[in-house]
Length: 153
Image 1 (cartoon, rainbow, N blue to C red):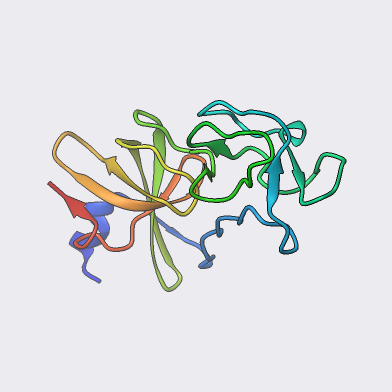
Image 2: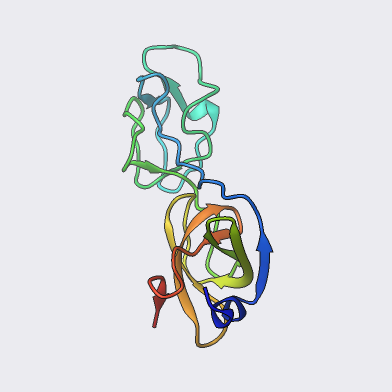
């Protein structure tokens, strides 16, 4: 890695490599959650909105915080693509961009240009000319896979 690459990223910090968090699936122990009432598109799911399988009580696990992507009827299974994880990055949000290579970790500030949930791809902007694509690691943190491969125009 050349000094120009390090300089290009801005701030240099050393850290251990950690893997990206994975997106949880909607099923719990193989049981698909079912809507307990009619749900509008864009509803953020709470424990009262679904139950697991034939259980009469509401669930404390499952797709809590997920969002309905269309109108859902009572009794309908709640699984992707009907529901999706809530975005943790929105357009215009300030984000920290992270690039890792072994034990080397580079970080700099940027701004999100699209929304995304954990594990999804988003576009980010460093300044008026440099735009990249990366993967959401957590709220406000985006991983750049490669400075050359992630760059968009």
